[in-house]
Amino acid sequence: MTTLKAHSDQLFGLETSLKPYNTFGLDAHCSGLYHIYSAKDFIEFLHKELTPFRIIGGGSNILLTGDINGYIVKNEIKGIHIEEENDETIQVRVGSGEIWHQFVMWSLSHRLYGLENLSLIPGTVGAAPMQNIGAYGIEQEHVFHSLNAIEIATGKIVNFSKEVCMFGYRESIFKNTHKDKYFITDVTYCLYKKPQRLHIAYGAIAETLQMKHISNPTSSDISEVVIEIRKSKLPDPKIIGNAGSFFKNPVIDINHYKSLKIQYPDIPSYPVSESAVKVPAGWLIEQLGFKGIIRENIGVHKKQALVLVNYGNGSGRDIWNLAMEIQNKVREVFSIDIAPEVNIW
Image: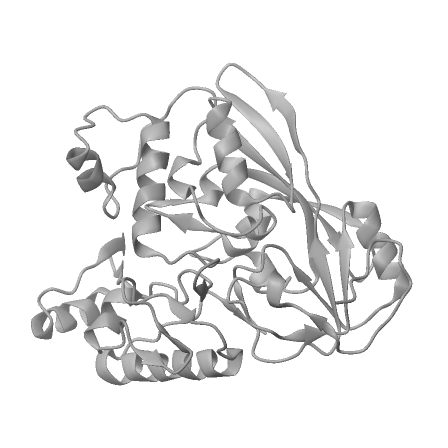
């Protein structure tokens, strides 16, 4: 395999395999792979004018449907630095190439709080604000402070505040108006020095704590329970190729939900506003019989209908065809559109 390191000028054809760099384990190829370790490296890469190119972090949120006719920039920017602190909070600047879960574990080991519900989410820190990652009632925006990013068109470094990022449910400005226009170099989070109100009402956290006879949980307890729950439901990508939850949970009008409730009394929901609720996409998919199905080398995981899997030699195109089949069936039966959480390449 040919890999372009920082400062290398070698160019090659479509012969660099991306199989080790995506958690689906898909053997797509690109023109060359360029590892960068600093903002300076990325600016130097821009000066080479190697186009087109795409940026990859942990490769846990992409589906490669074919070869990439261009270059891949692999983000390797590391480092965790304390910026400011007071009696209550501390601002921590994190390199965008750091592994998210390792950062969460670092925060807990330093008795910093606010990230415990986001344990074991795959991917890098740089992807967290792009996707506004979240789990068990918490999203990264709750402790987000700001980020620095390089504008690809100009090479200038721009600082983005929380307000400018326009966070929403698995959304940010970087998935909409600023899509493919910036490269995030570091993210600053404002963490708490003292434990805050713990969020245990979402999912199976409270039930698992009760089973463990933990009546006064700590942030570390919450993290351990979240890790246990995620491991019990989600396959390890090192064993079965996957990108975690493939679809977003749809938000629907309350009247639409009430009409579905008549036909499907067990349909779960989570309030979003007075006029809308969030419905678990996994529940919708499971009702249609997709959970656990196998189509040669691909399928839907047997424990979690939200997870599409590659059992070994599947293709990204086949996985995407299955995803579209699921989307169409959910729309046909429930009149609900479910959108991919995964980026389709």
